[in-house]
Amino acid sequence: MELVAKEKEPITPFIHKIRSLYEDYGVSSVLVIGGSGDYFDVADTVVMLDCYKCLDVTGRAKEIAASAASANGSAQHEASSRLPFGKIAPRCPIGSAYKPNDKVNVRAKTVISYGDVELDLAGLEQIASLSQTNALSLSLQRVATIGTGSAMLTDVLASMNSTLDKDGLDSLSPGQFHGGLARPRLYEIAGAVNRLRRDGNMCQKR
Image 1 (cartoon, rainbow, N blue to C red):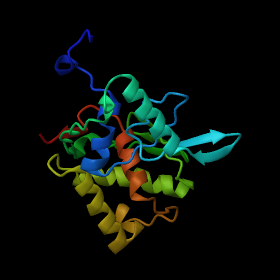
Image 2 (cartoon, one colour):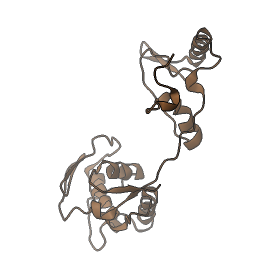
Image 3 (tube, rainbow, N blue to C red):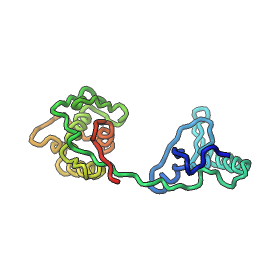
Image 4 (cartoon, helix red, strand yellow):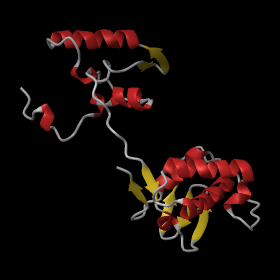
């Protein structure tokens, strides 16, 4: 018997939403876990590392999940019952929060001093050179000019990408020549935007 009724549970475990995240939004999940079999029933593929060799054990994992469900007297694991993921509120950057007040310093390939924020980009492993980081710092400053607070982040990034396709890297610093730029991917620009934590830098459309 459950202590807290399901409809009163304030936290929905990820296992109850993982299928709908893929089916509703096309987002795949890759989980690296130990010996727990909780996700066997909802997994499309189960890979086991054995003596540094990857083995596809999906069939065996499904057998274990079915056996566990049968032992518990249920025909289907509770987690596999589909719950809609729910609406994702689009985020809209507010340009004024991205103004660095003329204080920008690319200190290293993974560090930008941006205004009063020390921006750590170490998690963006695809940044290959300092030149890309230079371009990222300028990209953030472009968000300051095109982020209206009503345009979604995806639209702001798409607009920036289109401008880069058309006018090249010089469009990041109009009227200036910067010989130390290399184009980052849109993913790295988005990653830098996400890591710039400032009060009021994003609003959400409901």
